[in-house]
Image (cartoon, rainbow, N blue to C red; front, top):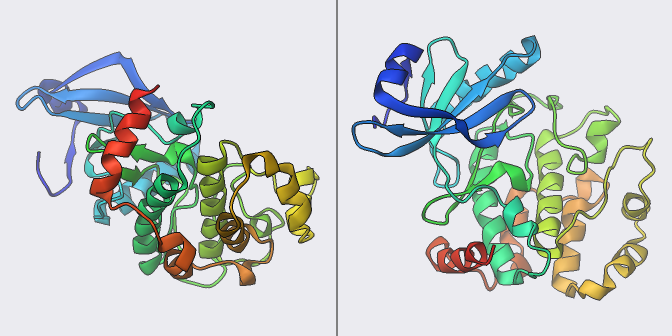
Length: 296
């Protein structure tokens, strides 16, 4: 497969790739992802097709193509090609699915060293994006995939933005992962909103469930209100049976705090002494992830 992304027409694609429309490996609001096989070298890829439900979703998908074309990072899914009509993209096939599979194993408590190492890989990608003023806009377990080599890679850039000016608005997100300032339509720092989403993801991976269901003021989520009102003792009391250590609690509080000015930047989060201690390298992490996935 060519290293430089290319464009293809759908007729050419059907001549060169095996495609089974029953082999669905992922679904989104307006897209479906299929596994396809190159007829010549038998390599596997993922083909993401969109239905263009409306102009906004068409823009989102075209934005994803534009960004993926220029991105090159070990922890971002590889982009190979797009169709001439812009309705589908050919990307790296990730056979072990997304991180939600680890969360679904309710009887397994993932060791904090493993969780920190997973999150560090995601943060590495986010640091790369933020250095180019790109904000992913929808960080959650379902958008972090596991490669054949058990490397974590983020995907789905449909809500991504280029934040070249202050207070650039995000275009979406997932409820329960969105920062509170985004929902009340204030001027906000999109990168700090991303850090909030990372905090929720970290919490979910270690604890096994979300810290709250929504930060929307109309929902009046009790758990979120504890955080918003800085009643952290009441918040952590709810989760005391899980017995999260003080390092984890302090770190989460620097990511999920309601005031974005007090929230970690990506650089601060990665340099936190508790977080960066006792981590696995990507190569060391791989056999641990393999064991967890085999237990499914």
